[in-house]
Length: 132
Image (cartoon, rainbow, N blue to C red; front, side, top):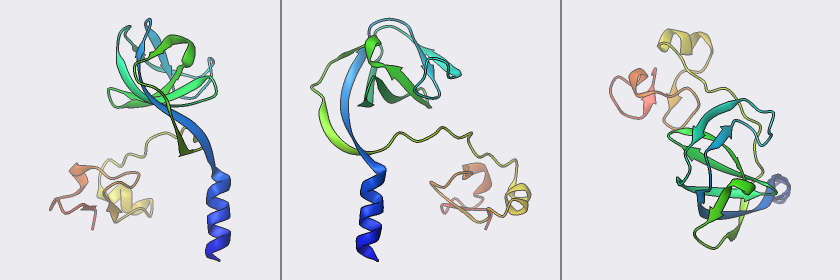
């Protein structure tokens, strides 16, 4: 069983490159690695970003929004380092619950810190477990 799990995990991994780079112009930050993907925001020229790149796209986060930047619009500041990274996931809408009643109705409660849907406003005693 552990061997099967390890093989499945390795199948889901791909080689990527990690680097710090700077944008060479104002760059649209799309949700997915595609020019036709919905734009989240515009990253100003000269912005320093940490990114993981695979192919012609780099995954990054700018002001709390995760998206992609084309390699054509960045200049590496640090040498790239090959890393074993998870394959670029399909983008999903964030999980947000208005209150604990909504989380319970969705079958999500309790919600641990780090899990989709966790928010400090739902964690009354600030112990890392919301809607307990």
